[in-house]
Length: 255
Image (cartoon, rainbow, N blue to C red; front, side, top):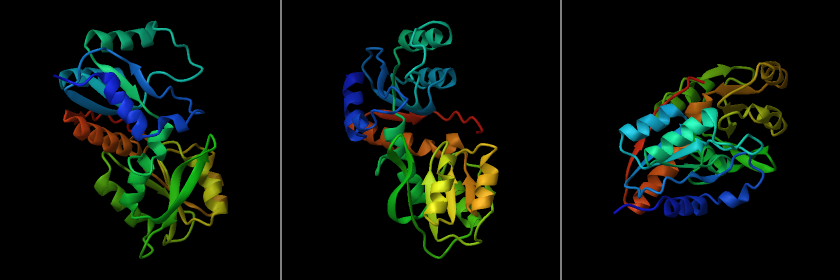
């Protein structure tokens, strides 16, 4: 006997306090209920056909994602691309749950909590305000590592992580901020706080000069890679709680 998708979704929503992110652009929670009891969970960063077909091949009845199918303001009709995706999920008995900002910011299961642990950031404080929510953390690291040493820590722990660096600040880093995914909006906040380095997933072209003129080192570790952390963490916790098999659906984008 498996567990109903709604039960798993309820546990996840409560564990991540999904209700606190009312302004999130993502429609967080259970997005597709295929009504199939769950014995095996899959975890993926992105809700996409690559992940759906792999979930089917792996025998999953439910997929947990960071980037789901439904976003506020988008066309919600099940036609075209969206129709194909939803039809595939329902036909193959795969439910879909998604969680965006609450999974970035959670102090235990979140992307940024995990990244902060990997980077060995101590005395963590809220950072990276987005939609009036602190998504990331900043704090101190011991022994003043270089950016190259921080990159080594990321490479060791994060799947498919291939960081590159803008070395615009101090050679050694004491105070570090982290915002997973598209966190380059926090460069100016990092400068105001006197941080030596910002670790994020993705930057825009114009961010180069902002970081350079403000003297902030930036480690760009990949949008996809930096957001594997939370879905793996909360997914494994849910699988353990319900006594389910689980698998990580590894579909990197290279970005």
